[in-house]
Image (tube, rainbow, N blue to C red):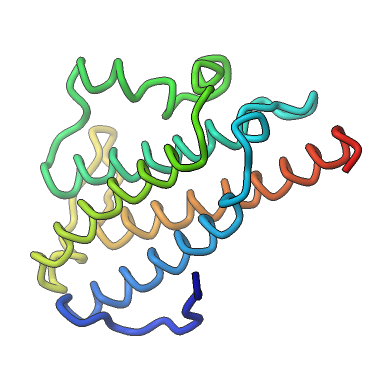
Length: 175
């Protein structure tokens, strides 16, 4: 896979949304390049100083994007049934320990499936949509541009953790 190191508008999107998608896609491409060769054991291991595994962080990245899809595209939060499925992914920690036994292909497919919905929905939006303002129940304002920036920011933070986990695993496993 070749990673494009240019941020630019993407055809079939409004100009500013295309730039946002370009940044989201670059972030994802680099994340996927970090994990492509990991084994199920490497995805599940938690070195002693880490609470989460690489696999749980990958599923969390997908869960954050799913949550933001619901908020920005559907104007809602998870239903009770959806929350039961996604809770370990979003809460992590002890709950995140339930996330195990998956292959790297599972995580790549999950991340790709979630991203395809994001791309499809964003293709339908005009640039002005990014600037629509709303308030959280506690009164703090937000707009959709921030919401999708946060999806990218969260993935970048967790990719840093994944890199630290990979180094710790190498050290722990004597590689």
